[in-house]
Image (cartoon, rainbow, N blue to C red; front, top):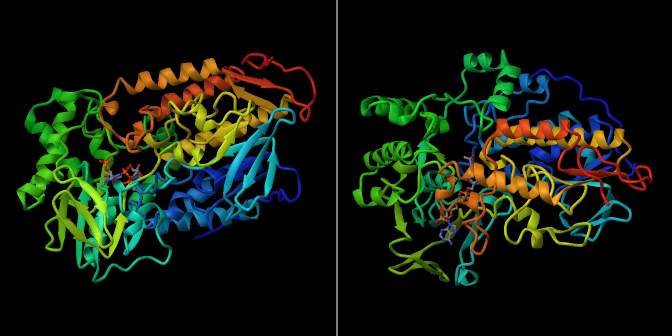
Length: 561
Ligand code: N01
């Protein structure tokens, strides 16, 4: 691979920080690069022992991305995207982590990253217009601006199940996997949870373990990945016009990912033709399946045709009819929960050493000293793997004691559900930006596309403030409320709210049921650009002592009082 020299930028060194960045995953790394390029002194604080964010922690067997690798990568640097070689259609976690490390080195980012440093508190001092961050070691960092690049799926969650502390075996969570790996050879293993992580890990664990019991509460729809090495032709085709592909993904798609988008309704064709189309996409593999018709996420009858097709494939694949029925989701529309993409998931239930335990028939009652007890039986387990997901979108932010201008805690403000204007800033928390925050496309998008858009917007906003001698920006409560209503309205034009998903906070007992992500990468980008072009409409921009001690000034938004 040919390399160009990393750009030469002065280290932020001992310069007072302009921006404190929390997290050094895909978002934090690109923030560092972009902010440096704009001449800001920025530093990232990362709880983990190295860069990578979600790809640092999620090392479970079978972990890979289900957005194609040529699309799930940075687009901000043409040389980088031309030079990096992805080996497979869907990259494995180790390959993605290698890529992230390569980016950190290539752009010389490590000198401004403090690892093994968890930010536990962040408070805004309105007098000094400064954020004060406190680390788990008690260190204090000050910066006028703070960006939370803490990730949407980074607060791994083990549910409170009675008896867990009595369990004598080994306990793992897919989202916090041991770095040395786990050898399940000869062990009896229990996996609890059948979301994307469980569905990827289960076939791999089944190949090693003496016996695997899969504890399923809600069946998920999964489509085959059909993963394969990338052909040189395909890569050449993609890279020959990389910039245009990226532009299309950004500007013309709702998910930030290019698929074969259909332009007609599932109900506009006869059964035979529909079957052919679904079969062709099933054979091709991946989430492309969900774009077979343009109304699958908005029309119940159309949606049912896709769900029926997948249920038929499950029944065809799984030998035991009772197991097949238990694996068939029936009580929510397909795609309303995150579609899973698998390799041999349904086939795994034909193995002699795998048992599906349907927790809807026989609820999980407790963990015992030696295994898992349901209402019907006790299953001995040498190891329990929790594939039970995350406190999504808000969990990592809630874990930090974030206090705004009036001392209000963010988690208290969000007690009834997260509120953030454009998903970027929450009113009352000046100079605090969120990357892929609730109210932005985030988890309903190719997150790399969303991250790059947010980072660019934040960088431009900071440059705008600097060039106008302004030191403070805050969202107005009115703009935030209007945005929240818009996010809700858009969601309710689709079938998404029909499923009790983590998009709705439904996986966390007591979490308010609010549909958190915004649907539509393309429209969202236009709205963010329009807000900036109108002088940051819906925000209050003002001067501060540090940036020039004058009266607050209106920049499209309204005057601070
Ligand atoms: O988590 P999940 P995940 N008792 O929340 C079950 C991304 N991702 O880590 O549905 C028993 O989806 C829960 O059951 P239920 C992707 O965005 C991407 O798998 O609540 N079971 C469910 O089955 C994904 O959507 C990739 O009834 C309990 C499971 O645990 C997101 O991360 C790969 C339980 C949790 O599923 C999260 O996926 C991996 C309990 N008390 C992840 N509590 C790719 O790109 C929870 N469950 C391929």
